Amino acid sequence: MTTHLGAMLLSRVRIALRAGSPALQRRLPDPWDIYPDRSDVSQGSNLAVVFYEIFLNQAAHSPQLTDADAVGRYFVLGIPSRHRLTGETAFMVFRIFTAHPTSENPFGWKGVAAGTTTAHANIVRSQTLEASNLEAMVTDRIEARTNQGAVALEFRYRRGVPERVASEGRVRFTAEPEQVRLYRADGLVDVVKSAPAGIDRLERFDLRVTLSELADIFDGSQEVVNLIVQPWYLRQVHMPSGA
Image 1 (spheres, one colour):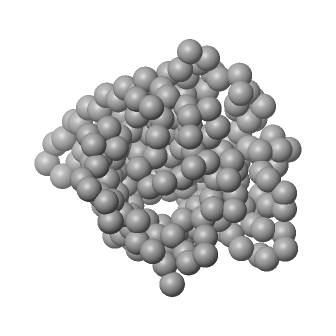
Image 2: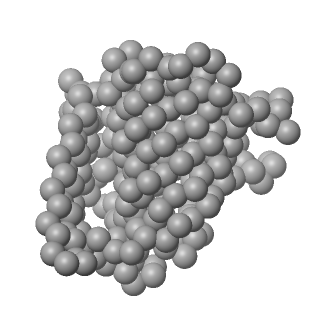
């Protein structure tokens, strides 16, 4: 049994990377271990950097959310993980950069309060589209900047024909690993790059991270495994009974 907390309608860009294991394992609470992605398009990746452009958050059992909670922009960093004793797999989030003015989360994650997992950032985005007949080239620039540095992403790609994909997964936070949310999603998936699947429609890609807290991860040795663009993504957020 689960409790429905709400829904999120958004678009997102998901970058799967292969980074040094010691730096990632240090961020996981015991008894969780890195569990590299086994899917066809992301196989071998052990880190995800995800950008969310949230068009609407809707809480299931509370009044209409304020503007700051109903919309948003986020960079989320997380590690595919497995519990050493139970075998449970989950996406373990260890850092969020958000445009929310108080760095809050609309669905009741105590562990993402400002100063633990979540940090406020000035997030800017610029997109250009060059279309001719059925072809389209997209340039996307996204930056999250704090007083300590920035996460800056710029890429240019040829748009493909997306697939519609339903998915389900568990999400936990390193700051409060005993809490869990179940995400059930339905969305469009455009696999722009996948090294395992031999797909590459990227013309240009640059991911720069200048935050000292992430320097041990983004030390120049990380590799891009895939990049996925999801122009439409509907996520239902549930809390399992007893969580």
